[in-house]
Length: 340
Ligand SMILES: NC(=O)c1ccc[n+]([C@@H]2O[C@H](COP(=O)([O-])OP(=O)(O)OC[C@H]3O[C@@H](n4cnc5c(N)ncnc54)[C@H](O)[C@@H]3O)[C@@H](O)[C@H]2O)c1
Image (cartoon, rainbow, N blue to C red):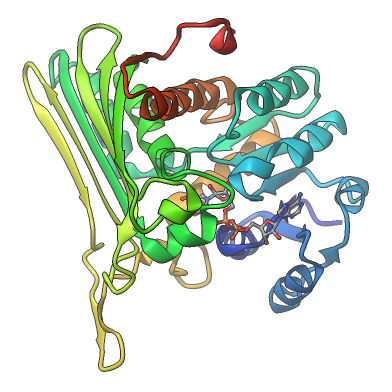
């Protein structure tokens, strides 16, 4: 009998494909099946990876995996997550935990009542650059944080595929909101957001949202989220973080990854080498996130981003969305709807 940790992936769309491939290449972990509401996609993905295509959530539960990774669209996390937790299974759900307070609350309640745990895939917590900035702040080397500026931009193609199920703030901004709160150890207290809607006007979504933040303790910041980059940008992501404190500063710039591949057909491209196997094994932040989750299922580690922390990021994003509607400053923690 194998002593590997057995994981199943639910939702093998664009990101779930990466998750499934990465799980399959982790040391000491077995991808023991996958499930997608699109049965043909589940079959073809499972066939390519040499694993079982499961045909329902019941089959996933009946397979008694050690843990399940849920990568359904942002607005479709609640049902699989609560049912898996009710069955006592450990779950890693993709960010954002949900797109509504109600869904997130239901998931947190299910986790509290479960033998299983709920982790949320805030992958920047596994990025060595973000960890180094957090360590620099925590050590006091930067002094008191004065401001934090974050940007994250994706290609149009990424946004247009997802505009029916999420917003640019929930899909991209959530990464930076969680990173800012995690790095500074302080919550965002108030937000004022403005947005531009051109390419996405027909979808009722912003192309770009710029949110100004007031943090507890007096620091200020901003989060810029956009999925309006030209599809031929070469790099699928352009992101940055700057933290300035009273005694120092830290900066992350993420556009290319020190790697450029140029072809006659596509011109320059700057692929993220995080997805590259190192001699047969997966490496990088995603592999580290999944390996950590495997340890959580074995009781050797606690969730890196808890459901409560993910909820704390979600309420900031929802406050941005209220600010966009009302065109006014929104107090993130005001009102019964975000009470704990
Ligand atoms: N951490 C990251 O960097 C990162 C990157 C991209 C996406 N994501 C997250 O991953 C999740 C998936 O995003 P995506 O872009 O791959 O979405 P997608 O739309 O490409 O794929 C979602 C898949 O889920 C399936 N699905 C929908 N409802 C289902 C259900 N109830 N049961 C089973 N399968 C179901 C769909 O058929 C589809 O194949 C989202 O939450 C997204 O925010 C995270």
